[in-house]
Image 1 (tube, helix red, strand yellow):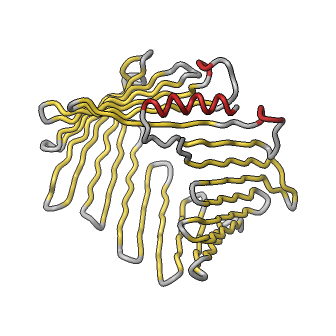
Image 2 (image 1 turned 30 degrees about the horizontal axis):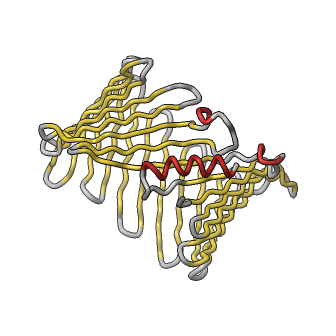
Image 3 (image 1 turned 180 degrees about the horizontal axis):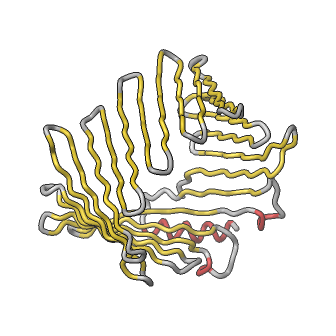
Length: 305
């Protein structure tokens, strides 16, 4: 195990000495049979440039003892950016080593014309989706229009957004469906309305002193969350819906941007997130009455080799 990690880290360090790999380790069901029960994953990314071309690249690999180094990489990804005749060109590519699928995205942006074009494709299937976005300035407000077309499904839609600072409206329309989202900021109160032919939802968010009230209402469900900042270190946020189901979240500040957050949903789950320096640990457990089952634990931190 140590040999594999050190060998992989040496390869990473030889490419870019200032990179900071991220190592995450997961334990499922709260137990494991030796190191085979652990699933350590090493993620690393770096960047370089050559003339007007900027490159960002990275790899996600399994960090486990093996003599087959070719089996370690899980995903390889990269981004190339450059400027050509006033257009900012971007090429994103990601390959899943396990499935063999390669996703490609090509983008072109012209700031002067407020126009952008994006093409999404795969290495095996060719071009999948083509879209373009045109922006307009209307008396200080911004309007954008984004038509898109899928060659795979032959579906077309258009998204229109309008933003004047306090109010944002987004309309999505296709042959089969239409949806509009309206957001309005009134200082202490924010309102969001989402409406389509199948569903409507209203979200009202209001803050006063140390209390925040959030109401979400739709045809199928209504729920309210009341968040109370008890003191500088503790915040309690109970949520209740129209069926009487309740969950309670407790957030405890540990100082220096560290925190402990616990959420209890009776007869459903217990979720705990602990942030401590570069460490983030998550615990999820199913809850049935007073019985705890199906415990899942993950831990992650940024490490420098």
